[in-house]
Image 1 (spheres, helix red, strand yellow):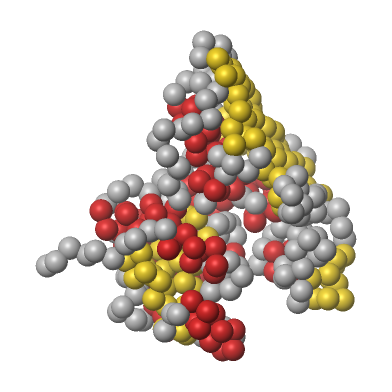
Image 2: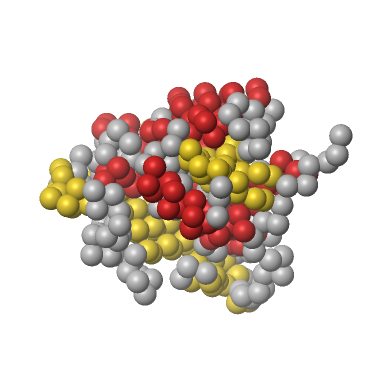
Length: 348
């Protein structure tokens, strides 16, 4: 049997973020997007024509039934991930699922179990490890740049204010489908674990700064029933600590005002921090100032890891296991906010 040379991918939920995903897959020579699914026929036709994708379906199950699709990229609202991923695995498709993996840790656990039983490749799209300098920062930590980690700070502000992001629809602010930045900015929990290891316990403070706001699909506005701002303190199993702040309403520091991503890690020998969206800065006791050049090249994105895992059996660094661990922190954050106290993270 000839060795597979290309992965044929179907995007389930070909909407707002299709451009990003098409751009990333275009960087992987062995990947080819062959199908889209989107519920609205007119929108589906338009996006097929835009990207020259001939196969289009308004029901994702029809896409899963096609033999010419080897793998799926799930880019739908969070509340649909569980159903779609289980159906894809049942259909024999490898799965790359957008973050957060699921609405609850229980759902994520069942998705991981099904994926492991299937023997198929599974990945959670924690793409900010590679998009930001965090992937390279972790390399310096692994090389002992700061020594034993004492503490870290993570700030992620992604404003979804209508004057800055008029295209944003309401589902992210719905408790049934999005859940606000606690769910949607779950990248911060992945970053914390990626840099600091397993988390022992968490305490959270959640707030809704804007009780009502307008969206592209709700121009007259709607009541916001989820947090739009969150603060967390984490204690790692190692004894290190972490403070995290996320927001959907705070303005970013980038030129367009949309985003602020800052990560700062201090330890026994030095300190290292992100510098804007792409740079790093730091100092260490014996080595002097941080060299900006990372000779190992960019940190591989989940899209590339996913394809190479299918074709060559290489490991996926953000499997459904990482998706589950992040979901456990989300669940614990909500329990902490309700109780006002620390919540211990259970293993498994």
